[in-house]
Image (cartoon, rainbow, N blue to C red; front, side, top):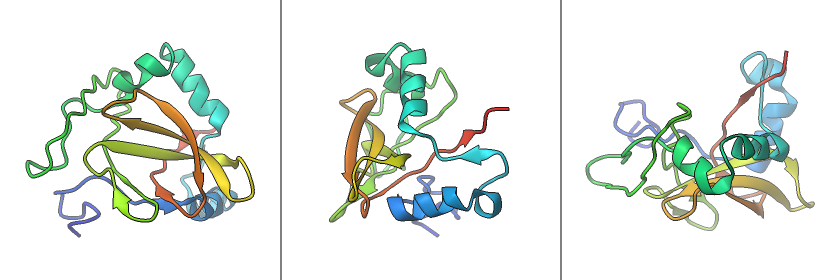
Length: 147
């Protein structure tokens, strides 16, 4: 409970490797809310462009003065103008890390047989893009399907 927010203390959510994320999206009719999908890199890029580019988008997407608990102060520095409310949720590659200063989100597309694209926010980068091993674990955000 303390790790996943059931008790209300931590609200970071779960981390998924890319294979789990793809499985969710491939089976979206039964596993994701109806009418939603995992975003493509193009959709993340459109969001960044719409918000004035990567150098300004991060601040607009990040939660205001967020910290996990008083035990984990953060220099998150968001304005949350878009009500996207990104909080630091950390990541897992070889170890768990970034819980106080990083949020990473998978995209649906692969960049190679062993890597996939992601977008990230942290205290020093506004809205970065990267590729990571598919076995790494990051957060997911869903996008409403076009109507």
